[in-house]
Image (cartoon, rainbow, N blue to C red; front, side, top):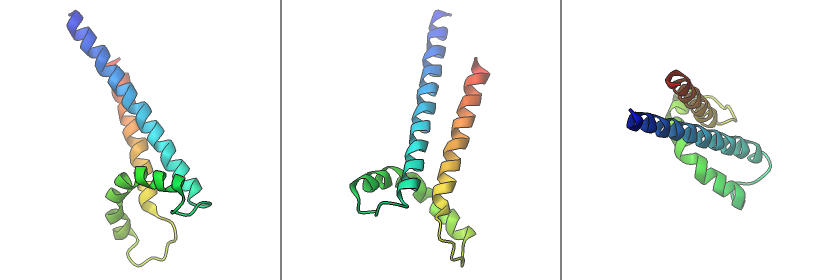
Amino acid sequence: MLMLTTLHGIGLQALLILVKLLQLYSYVFVADAILSWFLRPGNKLRSVLIFLTEPLVSLFRPLERRILRNSMFPISLAHLFAFFFLQILQYVLYRIIIFVL
């Protein structure tokens, strides 16, 4: 029984760490969105933020193209979709943690 309790605690700690990492990654998305208004993509800080956010954003680009086929909408919705995905993932993990406790 002690082994099961220890594994249970380790699993909960891992989930909590994952939630905190996702929260930090969400802050990176917000920083990228805000700084994109003021800094050019060639800026070193912007380059790092783009490097960190682009892997997830690129997954949502096809969805953005389908939604905005012939639109001249100036805002990238792929960033917004990726941010919402992170928020939903955090919520689901929080619910799992609460259910397990």
